[in-house]
Structures are given as structure tokens and as C-alpha cells.
Image 1 (cartoon, rainbow, N blue to C red):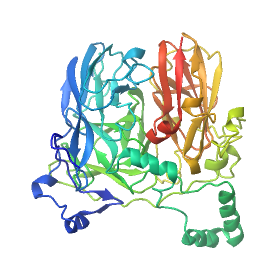
Image 2: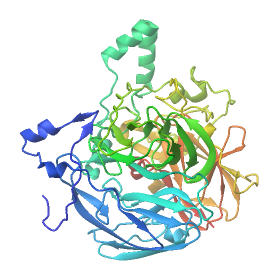
Image 3: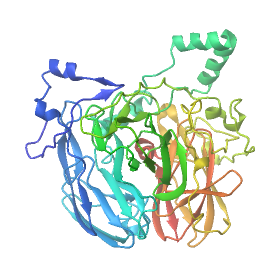
Image 4: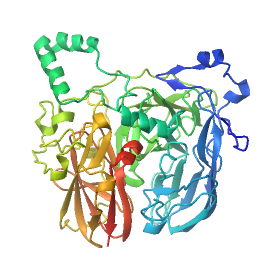
Length: 562
């Protein structure tokens, strides 16, 4: 029931799931609202300066024709875009109007531990009806974002973009500069989503293998091989369609708070250079983004400038950011198309010379299926990994009911774009393409290696590190000032974007050379990735998968630098 004291924000209401609208159903139920209610909401507001007031409160949000309660910042979903300057000290006074504890975490920013905004780790949270003032120096530039770190408030709308202007000015001059914050929205109570996943982990998977798929495999590979392959997946209790826990079956995908039907639009004049700050601010979704007719010049990853690389498509895992420059030369509209990794829906926006213009929206690609390399790593006959074999070392704690899969020989190649993108005719960005300008922050050779495994039992929706969920695990200790290597081995068949708070993760190539500096590192199924960390920020830090439901289920650790 809607409370009378809950303010309302008017949002585009059409819901696109798999490219379809539910308007007809809504009309039958008497849910269609007047035409004025279908107007796109205003773009996220902009706050600039070094002192800001942010208010967290509930509001009624309507993305689908049904009003639902959202958690907003200054009344918006997303919250305002915050613009700061490198080198200044910012002060952010946050008032929590909720009836429960809330928080804001500054994702990717190197801040003192007590300013990081993770309740139970770096501070106590912001109690109901109270306020907290964050104050920290801004030591970096680039594109970042902020979000709640309190249960499922992020899923309910508490997130927004951060743009930090470099002290020395932008390296890449652009005529236009747009933030594209992509997110996922569900009309369901996130607590109910989580409860459903715990009861039946494939409840949102509408792409289960069918008899038709088996017959197609039999025609392509022969009946015996098709039966053998299906039998092996069944023995492993795996599903080749396990690409996303939560799908377009419940999600509506948004760009800057606009549904695909609302079509957020950025203007340009033909021949201009347009900078797009791509942020995946979703709770549990991975997107493959392209702009038909335009190439993407990638100039920054997770806020850090990289050697420019020209691609046609890129994968944006949860919490990652990429800055790209495009140069639309024609007097026409271009569709920005970001389809979910399981092809169950898409986010859509437009670049156009004039308001109201639109281009064709590509159809969703066929749903991909996981390959043998996603189950067996370099032992898979399709692994295509010439970077050398490595042996994983499984902890004793991995042999329990919470782990249903272990990879003994993970693949280490960074040039794999991942499931669904491997057969593209055009160029797709991979981590192997990324090289941070200026090299590593610390050139010391890591003095030790910590190996952690990303583990889970998919059928029981249990997620963990080394088979231990957060409540069962001791903190990981970094010695203050040391340079160490973190090796992550994904023993599951799902992608896990891993985020270390407070310090940079400097990804290494398979031969140990510095590759790219990131705050969130996506580890593909059955893959091993190593990165170096300089433990120069004392305190208690969160370290977790950025799939919100994986994190809440236990794929979370505390890191202590002391």
C-alpha cells in the first residue's frame, strides 16, 4: 500500500522485457496512466562543488506502469551526478530519511577507511533519521559512481555517477560529454528476489535447454556426442544456460533512469567528438554494448586513462566503467544498444542531431551457451588458451556442501571476450587490449601471493571465497606498505566482478607484466586472473563480488591492512 507521505517521482512507465511492452496488459487492468505520466523523467540532476547535501528517502517510482517504492538520493533514480575536481577536498552531508540504516560508498575512490561507507566494516552506517558527513581529499580523476552498501538499497535505486575533472585538464578533448549510467530495476521487492533465488536458483532463467536444443545439437554433432555432452552437464549438475541469476524476466534495464521506450537521448552535431562515460551501475547484470555505425575509442577503464584502443563492442560487467569517444559524422540518429549477457533484455539510448530522432534497435542476439572452457578451464577442448597451463591449489574448505564445482587447471588468457562474444566478426574489447598510461603505480615485485577461489553451489545459491561464506571466514591480512599479488581462481560457471575497496588492483598479463589498473576485475568462468596490490591504505576494507545477490549470499571478505 502506498503511504500518503511518500513523495512521488514520475518516470517513464513502459516496460521492455525482451523488447516487448506490457502496455496492453496494463490497460486491461486499468493501470494505464494519462499521457503526461509517460513523459521521460528529467535527466539525473547535477551537483558540482566541494560541499554537497544529499538526502536519502523513499519515493514512489513508476518504470513499468506500476508504482513501486524506490530508495532515492535527492529524489531521483539515479541520484544526482556529482562533479568534483582532482585535488580538492569534498564534504558531503548525507541525511538519511529512511526508517533503517543506510550508507553511501564511493566506488573506486581511494579514500581513508572511515570514509568508505561500508556499515560494519568502515563505519557504523547512517542510522534512521540521522546524518553523516563524509569528508575526504579527491586524489584521482575520471568516471566513478556511488551506491548504497546496505542490504538491497542499491537494487532499490540508491546509486549515481561521479565525474572528477583532472587537475591538469582532460587528456582527450571532446565537444560533448555524457554520462550513461546503465542499471537494472525490478518491481519485485529485492528481498523477495533474494528469497526466490535461495529457494530455486534458476527461477529467473527462462532459457533452459529444451528438446529442440538437443535435436539441434544432434543434427550438428551426431546423436551420440549430443547425448554424451548433455549427460556430462547433468552429471556436473550444471546448466549451459546459467548466464545470469536475475534476468529480464523481472528486470527492466535503464539508461540514466530511462527505460528503452523512454529512449534517453544525447545530442550532437555531425563531426563532433562525443565522450561517453559508461557506468554499469546495475545490481546483478552484465551488458554487451555497441553503437551500430560507430566505433568506440576506449580511453579510460575504471577512471584510469589507457592507451586508446578502437573496438566495436565491449562487455561492461557490474560496477565497471569505461570512457569512450565516438565521432558520429552523419546527420542521423545512432542507437546505443546494451543487451544483457543472457540476452533476456536490453538497455537502449540514442545519440542524435535533434530531439525526437531515433534509429533502429537491433534484435537481441540468440542466447549464448556456456562452452567447455567455461566448465573445465584450459582442459576444455575449446579453451584456445596458449598462455600456458597452471594448476590451482584448492583449500580444504572447498570440499564441502557449499561448493559443487572446482577447476583444477584454470585458463589464464585475458584475450577471451567471454561467452556470447567469442564469434563476433567485429572487434570486441578484452582485458588484453587495456594498458594503463604511465604503467604500474608501484614497480616492486610482489613479495607474496594470496590465492583465493571464487566458489559456490549454484543449485543452492550459496556463494563464497574458498568455500567459506563471509560469516564463516576470518579477515584477509595485508601488511601495511607491502606489495603483494592476489590470484583469483573462478571455480564456478558464472562471471564474478570482484571489487577491492581502498586500493587499486593492477592486473597482470599471464607472464606477470603490468596490464591495467582497475577497481573491479571481472573473472570469467573457470578463469584465473592475478593482480598486484600495494597495501598503502591502512584500515578495514570490503572485498567482494559486485553481483549484489552473490555478495549477500556470502562472496564477501574483509581485508585488514595493518
